[in-house]
Length: 290
Ligand SMILES: [Zn+2]
Image (tube, rainbow, N blue to C red; front, side, top):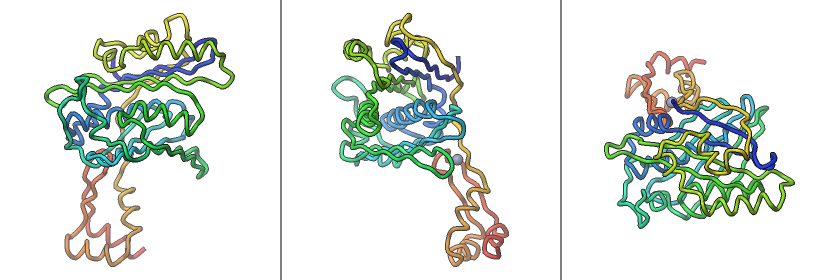
């Protein structure tokens, strides 16, 4: 089955739980960026977290997550929304290291541990919610857990996993989030603490071919939750020639003139999807005369 997300409530509705398979979505992003395995894992984990956050939004709301840990990978940016579409980019996709001591991709080394995770939610009517926390791990999943706890005051368990094939395609990608809702009982906290210690890393679960529903079953037990919905997830970028023209029109007219004179037009390159668009000199000319 293609990429999808499942969300539900569990433990007598004291927790919210979401799980997602993002394998094809991350594969698309990684191939567009030409990312090496360690960079691919970092981008994939961040985009998967963005999808999970997007699924908690409504209507036209959007979320953008930025991770800047001071490592060789540079900044990672991912945005998503309530419709399950996501995109992302990173400063340097050509980062790869040997596996770490646990035999996993060394995401922490690529991301770095000196920096911040910032989340901006566009909740419409020009209103934004911004939260930011320091990087506590560099492995990204734990960084999002800490973010939810410290910035949004929602105790959360976040699992994110990406497995990369030897040819740099994505073997498996996905994740889950468990959030404790206000007024939850002591038993719920105790139960989750115990489960968190026993839970297999999500990358292993994905590798075994577990679906989002099965990941939730593994996490809290099949009888302990009820499903609220499912939605498809995909890579999608909303860039367009119009948007590029808009961005260029904000430049100084003299800069636009030099694009016309020196280059005979302009090539616009989208950070998120790496699509290139050629802007004709006549189109540039129009930006100046208006
Ligand atoms: Zn684009």
